[in-house]
Image (cartoon, helix red, strand yellow):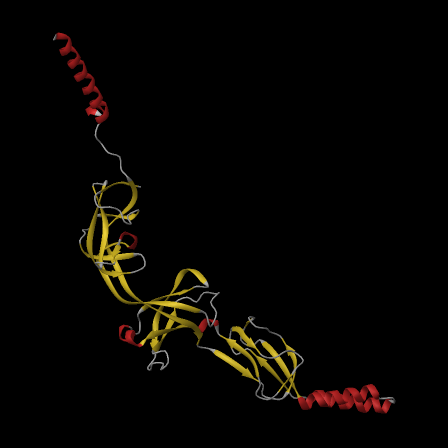
Length: 325
């Protein structure tokens, strides 16, 4: 009987040690390690605007297209497309058809002259043709650049033919196409940010300078002329871009980063992962207001200083243990 009780006692001790080893025991602790590493930011007060984004293109207020006042020959061409010009610079010269014929005839007489009298007569004819020649010299009307050219040196042009087009680069503006349903939201003086795909980087700041009085029948849009605060040197006429018109602004509202907010398409609700005590992420529904490309207005559901997950929160289960990076 004593032998059986001894075996029972021994088995009890061994079983207890095994159980203590599997459960970890109080000596090894019960703290669980975080499962997900995330980044977070605090909700804070600030300003946010509502933007209306519309397409458009650059135009210039000062554009001058020159035409030939006479029929003649381009005897001098000093500029090509893209060349900068200063006011008063000589661009090209045209010799009238009649003057060219007189000069050509006098020069042929001089070549064919065989006697001194003939040479003297030809020289007088050439001198007279040069002094009475009719020509036209085109000069730059203002500081700008050559936008287009339709002639070459040595070719003949008729009266009224297009020659060059000069653009004042300092008069470039952005012409935005605003859909008619949104026309009532814009007004003169509203701030605008214009972006060009061909010019990556910071947007060009501007304001609405004027709004067209009538809509385009085919596109059902109106033109809004946007004056640019600073015209980039690389900006050209005819460059396509998009204008973000700030139609509303709210000051001193609660904001969180745009990356922290997730939309539930099925319920049409907005969610964030709020961090409690730097270790626990709780999924929380919020009421949102204005949004822009970087931040979201929170009208209800959070308080100033609350931390929300900005990186690593997508589809994060509720009550997930996290580690802040």
